Picture 1 (spheres, rainbow, N blue to C red):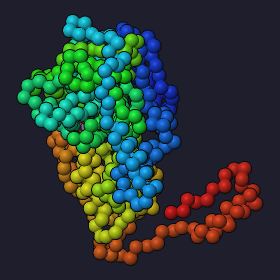
Picture 2: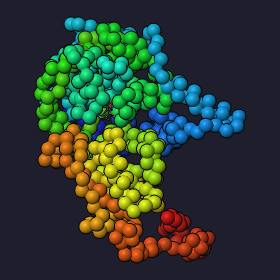
Picture 3: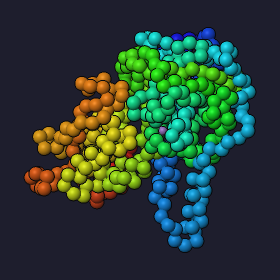
Picture 4: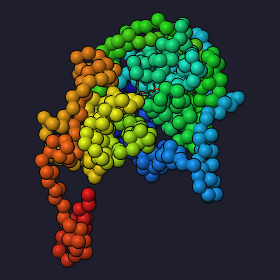
Length: 464
Ligand SMILES: Cc1cc2nc3c(=O)[nH]c(=O)nc-3n(C[C@H](O)[C@H](O)[C@H](O)COP(=O)(O)O)c2cc1C
Ligand SMILES: [Mn+2]
C-alpha cells in the first residue's frame, strides 16, 4: 500500500466505520511498518488508558485536584497514596533504552526510510503527523512536549508547524539563536496522547503521562542534543531549529476540513535518527471531521473537566462537538445561581487556557445533557430570545480558522439557553412538561401487560 494518498483513503473509510487499528507491514518505498488508527474508537481509547469510560480518567485527576487536608488515619493513608501517585509521575532518567538500538547520524540520517504519509491531494509533500516534539524553555529549563505536524523537505530537514498559541513556539521565540529539538515517534498511547494535551506552559506533559500511566515515563539522554528522549520510543529524531530560519510550509489538508494555506514556519534540521530494531512508524490522518483525532480531543475534553471545574465549580458538564473541530463550539451546562450567570461562564471560557480560542459557547441549565445535541438544540431554540440572549464579543481565535476577517482574531458568539429570571428581563418562565414519577412507575410495572414488549423494550422516560 502506498503512503502517498492510498493509505489515507483506506484509513478514512476504516475510521468512519469504527474499524480496527491498521498495521501496514510493507508500505511502498519505505523500510519500516506503518501503524495508524490506534486511537480511532472510544473502546480503543479506553483500552489504552485501562479504564471503562473516559470519565474514569477524569476521576483520578479530580481526586488529586480536590484533595483536602485529611481527617483521621484512614484518610491520611489515602492522602499519602494520592501524593505518591503525584510523586511517581515525574519522568525517570535511565542509562539505556531500545530507542538507541540503531543510531544514524550525519550523512546516514534519511527520513525516506520512514513511511511518512502524504495525506491529501493538495499536500505538497509527506507530513509527519503524530510526533511528540520535545523542547526546553531556554529561560527556566522547563520541558515542553507538543504534537505539531512536520512537513518533510528532504532526507534530513522538515518544517515545524508551531502555531502562534503553542508552548513549543514560545520556547523557540525565547532563544537567541538555536534551540535543540527532539521528536519522539511511536510511544505508548498515553504518552503519545499527552503531547496533544493543552497543559499550562510550565507543566511537563511527560509528567501528565506518568500520572495517567501510573508509571513514570523513562527517558535517556539524546545522542546529539542536550535533551532527554523517551527510552522506549520506536523512533527519535534529534536536531535543532534556528531563530530566523523560515520557509513556506503547507498547504496541508487540516482538521478544519480545509487546506491551510502556505505560511512561514521554521525548519527543523535532523542531526540524528535513532530507533529500535524493526521500528514501527506511527501516523494519523486529520481532515474533515470525524477523523481519528476526534478521540484524542474527546480524551482531553473528559480529562480536563475536573481542571475546568477548579476555576468554574458551577459547571456540571461540557461537550466540544467533534464536528466543531473542538474550538468552534462548546456546550456548557451550569448550576445557575444569579442573573447573568450564563454570561459569566461564557466570558470565563473565553479566558481559560486553550478554551479561550472557543468561537461559540452555548450555555444550558444543569439538567440538560450537553452530549445530547437534540436536547441542546431544543433549549437553544425554546429558551432563547435572540435579542436578549445572544452575546457577541471578540477575542483570539484558532490559528487555522479561515472564517474571521483577520487571522488569529475575531468574533465570539455566546448563546444563553438557560431558563431566564425576572431580573434578566423575562416574563414568568413556564414550567417544563414532564410525566409524574408515579405514572412512570406504574407503566414500568405494567409494561408486559400492554402487549408492546415484542416491539418496544421496557424503558421509562429519563427523568430530568
Ligand atoms: C493529530 C494532531 C495534530 C496536531 N497538529 C498541530 C500542529 O501542526 N500545530 C500545532 O500548533 N498544534 C497541533 N496540534 C495541537 C497541539 O498538539 C495541542 O495544541 C497541544 O496542546 C500543543 O502542545 P503545547 O500546549 O505544549 O504547545 C495537533 C494535535 C493533534 C491531535
Ligand atoms: Mn505544553
